[in-house]
Image 1 (cartoon, rainbow, N blue to C red):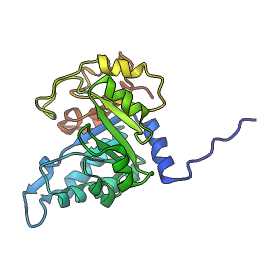
Image 2: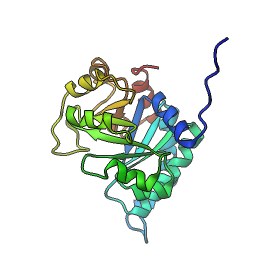
Image 3: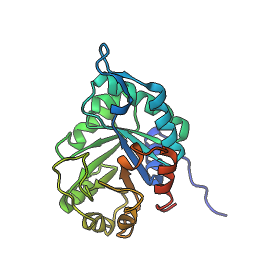
Image 4: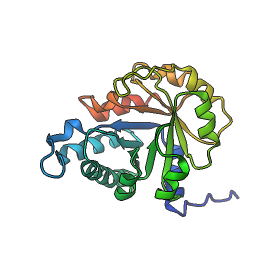
Length: 237
């Protein structure tokens, strides 16, 4: 008789189980959902349209959505993250904040993502505790090794694979970095990021990266659900 697998018993365990099952990660800004900039203390957001984007993305197979917009106020971002958390919970997905640990804490999102110049892992843990999933961006294999050995980091990203307007001026690293990361004997999942779309995703999966982060391939799609499905179909189950 096989031994039953215990169910996750804490919020952190549940989030990390979902992380391990995640393949498709989408980052979005908020600019196209702003109807009136700085309408009072916050930008006026089209919450119906924003919620529909979240719903369509998760329905298409997106596992994690991150709000990343340095042009909006903190209050605007909190509002968008709070809504994201609600929709993510409805779909059993993960919600993510970028860079601002205070906003992640206030909105209660599942994931906090940082770059190399942002908060150190122990600093983020002091603010967020152990239940929040933490990810870190890596541009070199040395940074990959550091993230892999950092007990406080749950996942890392490698890129940008190709140059992207999301990170203007940042040189592309190509597919070699995810290829090297895939060869690590690591229990941590990693995501390739940077200019990935339905046409070139095969170049990334072909070097061993079975998780990806995309931006424009989904956020600029006319049919968000179909765009997400087209990407998800090219990733492992």
